[in-house]
Amino acid sequence: MAIDRDTALSAPPSVQEISWTTRDVLLYHLSLGAGGDDADPELHLTYERDLTVLPTFAMVAGSGISASAGSASGASAPGASLDTPGVDIDLRSILHAGQGLRVHRPLPPAGEATVSSRVTELWDKGKAALIVRESAAVDPRGEPLWTATMRLWARGEGGFGGDPAPATPWSAPDRPADVVLDTPTTPQQALLYRLNGDLNPLHADPGVARRAGFERPILHGLASYGLVCKALADGLLDGDVTRLTDLSVRFAGSLCPGETIRTRVWRAGEELTLHATCPERDDAPVLTHAKATVVA
Image (cartoon, rainbow, N blue to C red; front, side):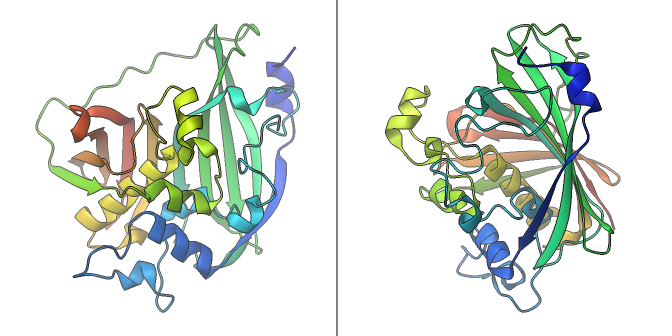
């Protein structure tokens, strides 16, 4: 059996030691377009003096180009496993369906962490499995840094006998957005972003993209996630990235390099509801079920 739910949920966490440098953080910020405005070099994101770190850097911490150089497709090498007993599937069947992140304090520009990861839920969707995987990072003193929750859609891996998951209907609030943030991307955005560690050729090779059903290479889902994080910091928080503590989304559609991601924001105190679309394609959804928390 490819998936044994009881074994997977009772398995001890896998543990990984990671580290990152200021250079990794600078590259991440540049890959999201930081410093691209002639009028504002955004030195708080692009210069090592007084550098602050976008919270979504946690998604690539420890996965820089040097860590991925041994694999033609980065961390998701064909045939690799999720390193979890009870989940024996080919990563080529997996789509990244959603991502959540909570940062427990501002991330340091350079550091080390211990990351413990485990499967927290497995849903049987019939033709697919929905895998929920949580990763918690602590610094060398054992202090929490971040907790990330990843939703993985494994095509062809359903039928193992689990529950189908509760329905989670979603719609944007029935009123005009309080703020609309437009973030243009550049034609080379995916080529830059992949240097953070995800070398999947889907994001660079036109032939691979066409065989996957796309007209051309697409932007990484986590790049869209980071672009929305930066847009919120720029458009709502006066650039203070430390005020954004939570960001959760579902990946609803692709974005091509050179297109715009439009983020509509509805405020309710510290809680934000978000909906990100692509205006060049009649506002086709890119991110849904999206929420963020900001603090004063």
